[in-house]
Length: 197
Image (cartoon, rainbow, N blue to C red):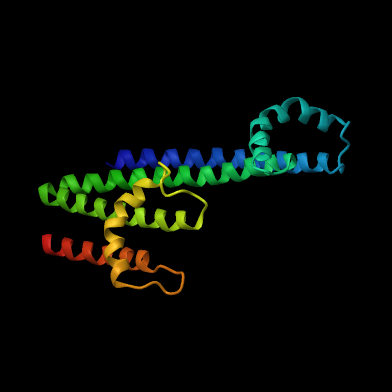
């Protein structure tokens, strides 16, 4: 198991370095593009010509998406940088998540049948808590609850939240049942794991 964890740690270290250098390069591209577009650098100079020949074709797909969304073409490098940083954070979190799953699985298997049951209980409650978080975040965004990306969270959490909504009235326009369900799941998980221990 130590070898697997060392592999995950090495992968994470490599990803961090690659993402950092890519973000620095993309940041330099964004600043230089802004300097050229704002005419602080000559649009006819060597730097501007280099950008038009080599960098602009790489940013063209991002620029099209930005323009279709109602943004300015000049902000495409900044959006690309934001997407890289966000994607990098998510990728590193995914590597950490998979590493923690490997550790949990190893500990569960070492614990025999009882350890496997404990692991399945932990994973079940973790998925339910993540589903509640996704549902809350989606409620703040213009995303349909029927979108295939988030429908699973509504499917998993509605049987938990519906009875709570009947018992707990909302405070104005704020529905506090996801908060209560989130902490309630933690208490129920703790009680179940104590009974099985």
